[in-house]
Amino acid sequence: MKMYSIALAAGVLALGSTGQAAELWIMTGMGPSTGVYELAAGFEKATKNKVTVTFETGPSLEQKLQSNAPADLIAGGPEQIEDLIKKGKVVAGTHTPFGLAGLGVSVKAGAPRPDISTVDAYKAVLLAAKSVGYSRGCSGTHTAEGIEKLGIAEQMKAKIKLTGGGPVAEYLAKGDFELGIQQTNVLVGIPGTDYVGPLPGALNKPCPFSVGLMASSKQQDLAREMIKFMTSPDAISLLQKGHMEPAKRS
Image 1: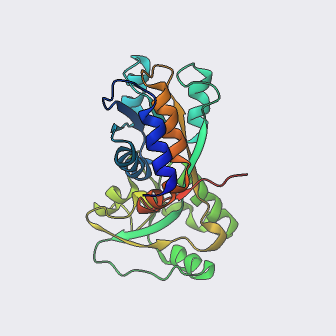
Image 2 (image 1 turned 135 degrees about the vertical axis):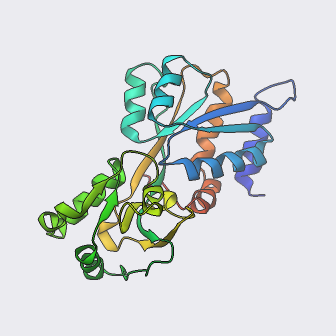
């Protein structure tokens, strides 16, 4: 076990005198979910405290926030965390960037995997595709910006299909479009699809994700330790296991 994990476990055990394991609840949206699940498992292993992660879509998240459902941490896009701070749902000063998710391409299972290894190759694949699907969130915004930089936005306009929610790969598996572009961490492993690879070069602009302490948390000290863990050296391999990378530090 790494020295950080040893120190973390000792610090967490010192938080309470009962010796009983505590339980943390983390809410996460789709974007950072793979990394959050891996980090939760790592924190459990290091501290022996249980960590429950709940996957929340827009409507269910809003309902839980309005009802002040029990939760200790929330992971999402930085704008979302800042908005929740303004609403008093997240404790000010706890907004912490922890992960990045790069963009990739998938095709329907069994379809030829195109060459997207260079910017020129990727551009050619987009122009040759009959249809291309991406989301309305961060990954979709970055994908659209990349298409604009390639100078083919007008040519692609009729081919673009924006998804209404959920993983792009699920729409791809149903045959809604030929190419699917989204964060790699939510493309890999979706049944009915094959992951092709990451977007090339500067076109692969990753989506950032942050975590914040819920004002309603009953385990604030332990939750703060979890935030430290999510940005620690031990978190790097866990994030990478979830096809993410650690947030860049200034």
